[in-house]
Length: 473
Image 1 (tube, rainbow, N blue to C red):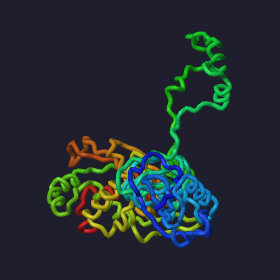
Image 2: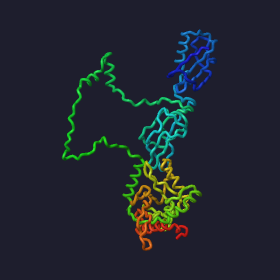
Image 3: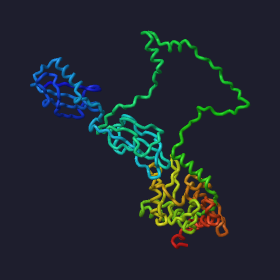
Image 4: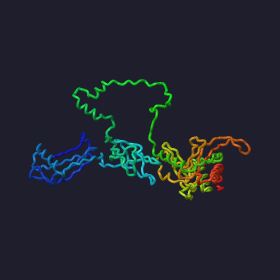
């Protein structure tokens, strides 16, 4: 058999064959005279792993052609002129030859776009299916862009800082089952010579340095006078700019700042305070924490007690659960409690749905699950949407007293603080009691001081005597 091969951009030796195609080729003209080979020539496509296709045309021996250089040239000219024998120029992956794209996933009904924050993988890195390769920051959460298949990161299409939408292409993945490292398609970012330097080097004769270098050698360095140690009487002494670090604000931080400022500009904010004796709730927790953990698989904390107290207070003062909408007041017939959770990337507020229908164990499980998702950055938009009342526990960080800001479009927020032993008068005697300051910030346009004080008083009564929840008094 006479083999005629054409290769395009094949580097190195054939370390392995990725694919093998074979078919009959119907060529319309024969450079070998009257013999023809329309029904006899065979075409073989060989694919080197990680490279381009190699096309081989095999001709039978009975064509009557001598195997010499002239016949090879005649066959090569036919391959160049015959349009039916064009060579393919497409990159393939190492095994399956498929190229897949990593795109931005669906981010929720209320989120239309996000900002490409960082790349977790770079060209040449190996990834497995569903492994995150980039992170998208939205107004509320950080979303991972996962690789759809196992393979090699071939190219990064988007750039850090780009605004992307669902379906936007982020990277190109070459499907592969091995862990072979593929050279990145993007050139390394190194210092390149300018056009003028290249031209000067080209004009300079051999053995002679470019003029730019000569002029640089001849030019003497400028000697700057030492800075004056005398402070200027008119200008203040500020730290140098080298000691400052400027970073762009994340989308989540921008959104939090905007919402808090809108809250101050829109609502008539007013805060009322009270103090709670935590003795009975702490004793309840101490007596039943082991049995509670053994039965429900979750620890008994103080948050479930305050959530149940807030539910009771919202039921006694429905106006606190309402919201202003234009010229109307919307009374909500459900109670969804938002729990403020601080994360390294910003503040998020996951929601406990239908808290009035949940018991202590279900509330504790819901809080633990949502708090873990918020810390890991895996919480979804739906898990933070809505909410009719918010509880913020600054006591876990040691806060003694604060005035929380309402989470729009809600009308009130409860602030919890740290527990401190203080001297209190009980039964005519001074005793040490674990006390907590609580604060209620409310929209004074909708809620009067009477309702706000009664609301906070109800929370105090329930927390100080949890038996009220059993008797509904």
